[in-house]
Amino acid sequence: MKITSETRQMSFNEIQLKTKVRYEQILDRLDKPKSAKEIAVELYDLEIIPSTERNYTAPRLTELEQRNIVQVIGKKKCKYTGKMVAVYQKTEDIEKMQKEYSNHIPNIF
Figure: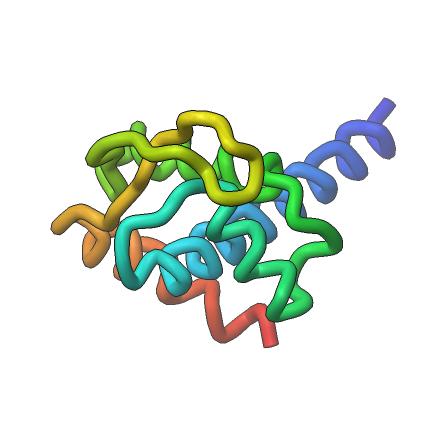
């Protein structure tokens, strides 16, 4: 039983680090208001994610919104899907998150 607890914790820690990295990748691309799909396409073009699927970015954008790091500022018709989508931009609280995670970034490389 102890081994499964340890491996479960190791997996959780790895996921947490990957999530923090994805936050930084998303915020780096959010130089102007964009949709989850637009960010996913940019990350795909940079060979950071394996496809342009918005599910690589949308859950993290929701988490960032809940933490007041990004905010939805409106909606627009997606040029990729033709559907109405939310448009996100950074908030002033971004500095708070970057300071919170900055000690993890050197460990990535």
